[in-house]
Image 1: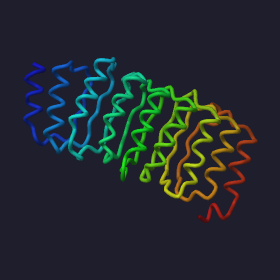
Image 2: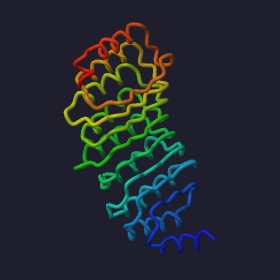
Image 3: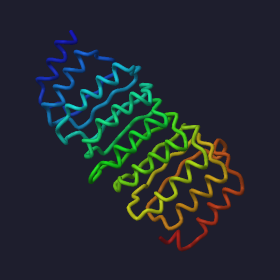
Amino acid sequence: QLVAFMRGIIQNQSIKELSIHTDLGDQGFESIGYFLRNHNALTHLRFDDFHVDTDCVQNIAMALEQCRHNSLRSFELDNSNASAEGFAEIAATLRTQSQLEKLHLKYNNIGRDGCVALGNTLSRWQSSNLKCLTLSNNNIDDLGLEALVEGMTNCSNLETVDLCDNRSITAAGIRSISPLLQSETCSLKFIMLDNISFGDEGAIALADGLRGNKLLRHLAFAPTSAGVTDVGWAAFSKLLCDTSSINN
């Protein structure tokens, strides 16, 4: 039945969105690779809600390598528990997909090594179109975030970043975001940092980074889990009470 189903997908030239919720095995992913190589209408590709082991990750990466068109706008790998090593293979295959506008990679386990691989991919993109990057709950730490920020500085169209539930990030990691917020090429409008304990030092770093920033519209974090006290709130208060900042 799977073979017949995959044969039907390959023959369909009008599919724009493809969601996969199970491991298709070697033969199934080989068909997906053929589909990606020969179809230029696909805009959304999604893998989610199933465990991605080493073999499955390699199959996904090999299938993505066959995608030679620039029609793909969104790639999702969600709730799959992809390992850092496995995700690095996928990140490497995304180097030819700089036209992507959305990368949804939440609820995996990409860790520091996965962040380094993704940061390298983002850094190599020329004329990046990326607008949304979702990385919540991925075991990202401070050094991983620093590697990501290096890549994000190359994404001048990036508007939304979701880093929620990466509990290994501290104030040191948050400080790496500050130069990005002050960059002339920064287009960020939404930053989500819920369930990250960055404390007063992180709050001060964010407030310093936002000084002079004219684009950010939404900064989300939970005050209790963030560990921000009156000291951190004073930094935000000073920023908000600066009339030149408000007017800009």
